[in-house]
Image (cartoon, rainbow, N blue to C red; front, side):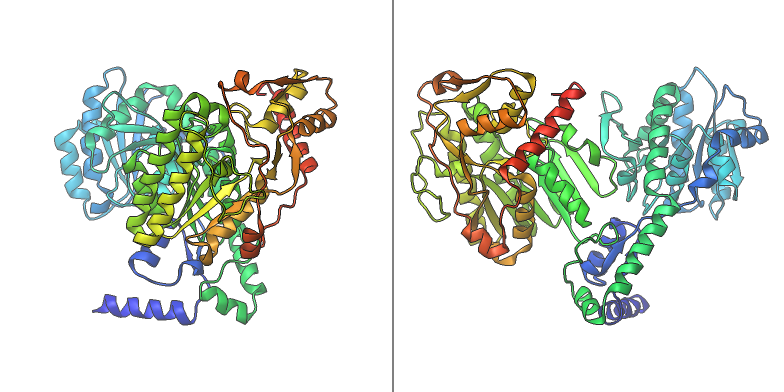
Amino acid sequence: MKTRLFLGIERLLARLATDRIVVVSTLQLREINETFRVGQRKQFAVIPLGIDTNAFADWQERRPRLRAELKVSDSELLVGIVGRLTEVKNHALFLRAAAACRALVKTRRVRFVIIGDGKLRSALEAEAKSLLPVDDVVFLGTRNDPENFYPALDIVALTSLNEGTPLTLIEAMANARPVIATEVGGVVDLLGPTVSAGNAEPSYAICERGLLAKSGDAEGVARGLVRLIEDESLRIDLGLKGRDFVLRNYAKERLLADMTQLYSQLIATDPAASEGATAGAEPAAGDYRAVWSLRVLITGGAGFIGSHLSDAYLERGDEVFIVDDLSTGSFGNIQHLKDHPRFHYKIDSVHNRPVTAELVDQCDVIFHLAAAVGVKLIVESPVRTIETNVHGTEVVLSLASKKKKKVLVASTSEVYGLSTEVPFREDGNLVMGATTKGRWSYACSKAIDEFLALAYWREKKLPTVIVRLFNTVGPRQTGQYGMVIPTFVKQALSGRPITVYGSGEQSRCFCYVGDVVGALMKLMDHESAVGEVFNVGSNQEITILDLARKVKELTNSKSEITFVPYDEAYEEGFEDMPRRIPDISKVNGRVGFQPEKSLDGILDSVIEFHSEQMSVGRG
């Protein structure tokens, strides 16, 4: 009865008298907002904990203090667990894992330390005596000198049944201590993505910043401890990565900056705007980190467009999840994001239903960009093209439909096929080539994706949006699969012949990736875009031959321009479209889209990117 009363009060206060509700993690946000239904999502400000990392600056000098107190030699390893002795911390599992670990390790002595106190101490001490030699486990009780006891430990464990933000792990990592923990609550985000399974029968996983075992799995914890005990280089590597991550993301200076930013936003907001925010209006432009308003899933997120879309959502203050099997994407595209606290990546295929289902459940909206792309790949691998595109889209839509999560499906200008009705309108006819021509497999598969997405909207009321992209270009795009601008730029910069396919009289329109990403985000936010198809691209036309000349001029290249017949470049009887120009009046009218960056500006950005890549040996 009291619980219901207090929940009612909290809900009332959130609705009538609260501009922002501050929580320390997205996990806490979901519990308060979704489980207990307190507040509206856009009222929440997620501001992670901050600790005084300066207290741990001289951890190396402090390492001997507790070790001397416990008479631990340099040749011995000390494994510790820190926390109140209560049921939820599950110290009993730690003791069982310690006993199993001791039985497996024969090469050196390992001792175990339990730091903390509580009602279970007597029972845990009795259990420890039954499992381990008396000298191998020490109960230290409550300690108020974390700057001394963390550096003394060689490994820090956490075996909780539940955990919000694991402060003990954060403090351990601040001292460059390698950690192992059970897979609960906020632990997963703290330790980062899985790098590899621990062994042939994975009972633990090696993550980017620590080891992870299943909740309640004493054997998994034990085997993970053994791995850390026997692999000094792994201990050092995880410890240093963990310290670097904590210093960047959990320092008190970052906490103060986040709080200052939040208060500045609130002070600068007039009462009318405050009411709008409480009612769930979009955060003001420029809000960063203080308000995490949306959880975004991007399939194919390590691809060219997906990585730029990730950048934009993170900059807006949202939380981004991506899945990519790296078949055409690249980890290099997201390397700069991997340690961002609001960026999460999974190297896997959308065809893996359990993985995709979990990601769909975690997110609010979905951008389905994963696809087989590039004319060269399509011609060479039509089976892969069809299966990747059609089945991948089917998986995403079916899973999203269960939770009615909004999906934006990226389609292509290729669906217009051989149509001559230029500029192409969204309601115009699609004219496909013969099924004996492999190059049309991509266009047909994406057309099926569109039919499927629209059918899910009409029959199952799954909100879907279709975007037909026209030659999106910019930094990070590769020429590996036949994309023309990066191919020309790399050829010109290296002094190789610039190869124009066909006569070069075919024309295209090129749009900057930043302009495209802005349109995608606006369409996702716009309710009236649901159930509609939109062309997104530039309508400024240039022939491929003139494009080659322009690239040559801007790079000051001495490369000659050569011509390669289509039959030689792709396949016998290859068919291409002479012109491909979008009518963008629909998307302009709906969300105000108009490309801003000129072709010269686009080429300058691509030339700069590939020049830098070539200078470091990546071109």
